[in-house]
Image 1 (cartoon, rainbow, N blue to C red):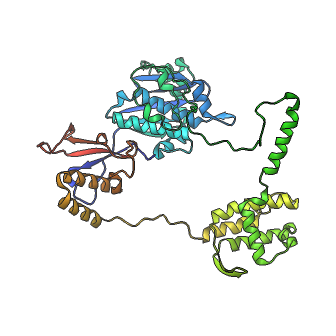
Image 2: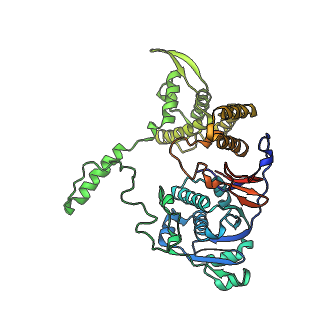
Image 3: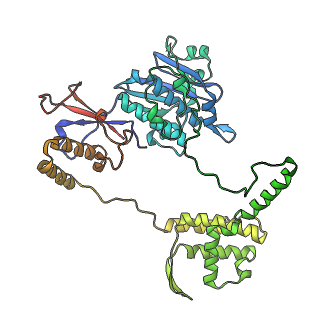
Length: 444
């Protein structure tokens, strides 16, 4: 998901110019928030605060091996904050202070490799779109966030001492503490006006949700088993499993090294030599791997293709494990000083992938606007506004028209654009004589 929290202001007096100067946003509220595994979560501004104990579903979703993810719990707190405060924030820009260093970057990127975290970010964006507010999340030291830390530990006395003494507590409803499902749940949970209990299975994968099929590694195991044969059946399964597990020699990096050895005409002793000779073999193979050339074999002319330095690094780990297993040597033949230094030099010398796109110029935009003026019909003004908005705002005019299904979290909609005249919001139309002086729009 792309960012949905930055708002730019456009001056209509310069709408035809080639540059626009975004005006700075002023935060009308400042909140501080914190969450931890000790008790729960909380946040406050000068007038209000809330606190809530983590539910078992939240703690289960935050578990990473042996510990709870602090980033997950802090991000969930922001989702709870958006749910609780959405109505109060309508049309405003909010400054949020947190003491988790990774959280501001996650909010700026609005994406996460964790599917549940992505679902939380998606729901936050949808709540912002519905209620028309934005926020800026920044990091502060733990020492500057003592009052919020007290709320996350349910220490109301310490909160009153270090925070706003007369702040009013907002009640967190059970629905506010519901963990969104990894897929599709955010579209269902935008309204939170009526309290309701946590839906059954919330935060866990539903039985009807599509899952990855189980890999058949147990063979034809009987559905009903005589317990007197339990050990024998499990031993047979274990033997079958070990024979089916891929060994190190099947890795793609090992196959690449062995093909190089075949082209060199090496025998088995040369392929698996002593440690020092193997180190030299590895460096010869590394130099060969990143180059493209043609050679002739029994089938005719063959082109050997180069691999990137990043791929070579992965291949080296394969060869390292394979050589240790087959030759009975310790690990590390590819991680010694010389191979590592050679890999670093190859990484610097080889060209990186070029993601530069062909430039979109002001002349291109003028050509588009001329076409709209000629063939736009009744929608001419709207297309002109959309193209110029995309050009000046995000330089992605093609995104004014969704490619595929419309998604409110990714594509522009009417609520993303607000017109103002002399500080007052107006609603211009084709028959209106009111001319806006500026407009605000959400960049996704």
